[in-house]
Image 1: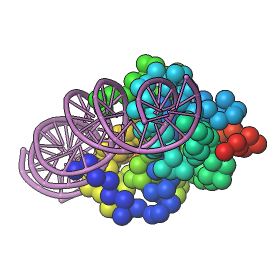
Image 2: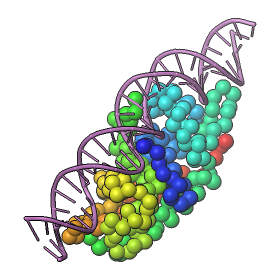
Image 3: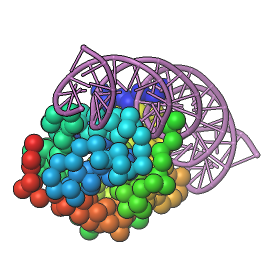
Image 4: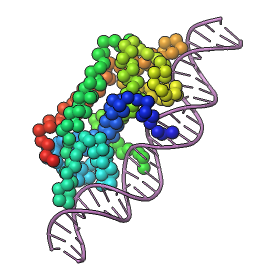
Length: 109
Length: 109
DNA sequence: TCCCATGATTGCAATATTACGATAGAAGTT
DNA sequence: AACTTCTATCGTAATATTGCAATCATGGGA
C-alpha cells in the first residue's frame, strides 16, 4: 500500500522519523555538510560540488527546507541557503534524548 | 529513476544516510523505543503493542537488523530482539559528530 | 526592452517502500 | 505423529522516492 500509517504512532515518533528520513539520503547529508563547511551561505554551487542535476538538488533542498533544517534567502538572482539554528538544536536535542534512552547495561542476547 | 546515485558520495555520507534512513519510519522508531523500554528482550509482543500486521513488523525488524542496530536470538519458538551495544554507540558517535560540526555562530541569512 | 543567469516547478520513467494476506518453516506440546 | 505457536518469506497492490530534461519565473545586466 506504500502508505505509512502515521495515525497509530505518537507525535514524537512521527517527528523523529521525519527528521531522520529527511537526512536519510546521501545527497542531503552532502548538502548539509557542504553548507556547514562553506561557513558563509553558498547557493547553487551545490550543483557544481555534488554531481547531480540542478533539478535534483533543488528537490533535495526543498525537502530539507520542509523539515525546517535549512532556510533559504533570496539574494538577487541567486538563493542563499543556511542552517536554521533553532531547528538544528532542536534536532540535536531530540537525537540526544533518543540515543540517551538506551543504557547498554541490559544487553540480554 | 528511483535509484540513488550512491557512487558519487563518500562512504561516510552513505553510511550516515543509511543509518538515518533505517530510523526514518515511525514504526521503526516505535520498535526501538519498545525494545529499550522493555528492559529485557521482547519478541513478537511488538505485534500486539504496535498496530501493525505481523508480516509488517517482521519486515521492519529485518531492516533494523540489516543496519545492525538490533540483533535477534532464537529462543525456542520465538525470537528475542535487542539493541546491539557496539552498533548503538557507533551510531551515537557518528550522529554526535555530524551535529557537532555546526557551531551556530555563523548564521548569515 | 531584450537577453542572461539562477532557481523552482512540472512531467515523466524507473525504482523503492509500505503494508498485508497467505503460506512456509521451525520448535514446542499433547 | 498431529497440532499449535511463533516468525520469516513470498506475492501483490498502492504509494513514495529519486533523478532528469524541459520549462517557467524572476531579477539582474546590455
